[in-house]
Image 1 (cartoon, rainbow, N blue to C red):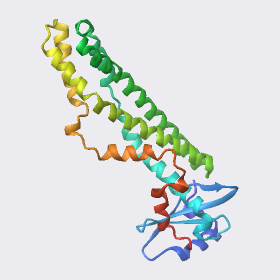
Image 2: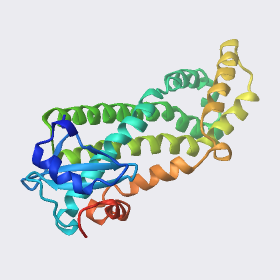
Image 3: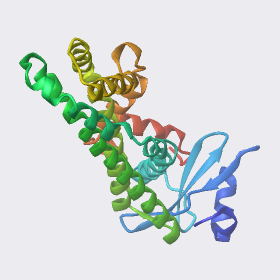
Amino acid sequence: MIRLKNLPSHIQKALKPFIKEGEQPDVFPSKFNINGDMYYYFAFSPAKEQLVMCEDGTVKPLNEIKKVALIANAYNAFGVHIIEIGYKWKRNDPQWAPKLKRLLLVFDNLVDKELSIKKDYEKLLGLPDFIIDRQNTIVNSVDEGSKLARHTNNIEIVTEDDYFKMRQYNMAMATAAYEQNLIQLETEKERDNLLLFLSSQKKSVKQWLAYRQLKVIFEKLLRRDSFDGQEMEELKEIVAKSEIPIEEDEFALSYLKYVRNPQ
């Protein structure tokens, strides 16, 4: 990993004029190899501003290193997202999902006789497998993204291909989390319908116990009247941007105003 104290003397000398009083600079653990040229990426705290510097210590105008700045900022942000958000999602293992599938199957004979509820029941049967599949995507994306970050830190080089890979891991992770939330909201009506139907049916002891456990699980799933949609909207926005090149992403471009390279 690249550290400030290990930077070549000519880089440390070239960096000094850009450090303002009271600031603490930091350097990204890897150089960025873009189109065959190497660049250092610095951040300044508490200003939250950045600087892109060539390997020879030259600081080029922003218009000449715009792509490098965008890729460096995005790669760093994706890595932070995996650490701060991805690991939280990974630990949020939906252990209720396999149990839900088992509980639903207990009522197969009751539902099979009633066409009015069968469609809702079949939709709910697919819910656990869908949740588990998306959780596997989250886990894999977090693991692969973390592995890539460790690799680029160790070899001290990030390529444009590494950026695209890290972007894909983040997009896959965000899409899976969004879809996990969405399917819970989209099956709210079916859950209510099934519970109402089961409450009116004569049940065996096993079915009665399963019914009580089913209610507990359903109460923990997302509902529109008690759901804070802010995270959902943020995820939706990330998913919508998955096909937009970084040079055309207005949100990414807005960060260029924090780059200290000459305008």
